[in-house]
Length: 246
Image (cartoon, rainbow, N blue to C red; front, side):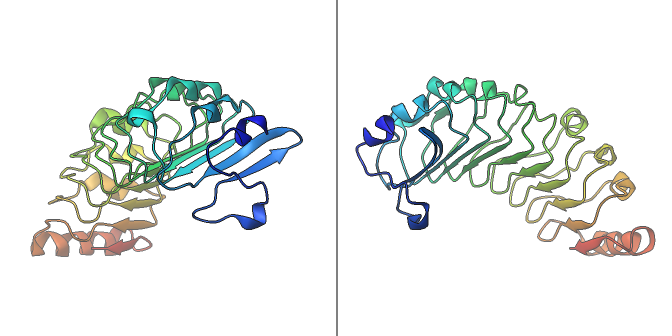
């Protein structure tokens, strides 16, 4: 309580008064275990990284000092969920990967161009990075849900596809992706794939070996009319249970 009372803006501890412009904290005894920072335009107090029992940190519409998510983030070793939205970030510390209990990571509309290697996040199962300028991510070995729409990706490499065998859901719409890796069939658990409004001209035959696939969203790409008819015919014959949007 001493830490949150030192912030230069009020933090409400009554969860019934949560709102888009209200900063709120949840306590377990004397420990802050969840905090939502919602004071638009204010700086994120660096003392928030002293809350070592914090399990969820949710930041929206606020600023980091010099646009940097600092090394002090590594103090939050109990963190399960980290969400940062509408907050300009020029750099995020490499120590992000030291948060060994982190299960969910969201960085949305923050102008982010680079991500540190995430291979240390063994428990991470959901990664959401929409509306940024990221073109490369490394270390996603156990992630099952991946939301990367509105970024600067150009393709998924064969090597990276091999790393991502835990994926069940991929949303990679509105990017510069033009090629689907031929070894996409290695994603045995994949059930939902969204590659809409990108620059894809054809899909590999191996995509039809994804036996768990339920939804394939590929409209708004650069398929020829002939390719569209071919894709529809093949899925109708070989995988009629797949919901195809093209």
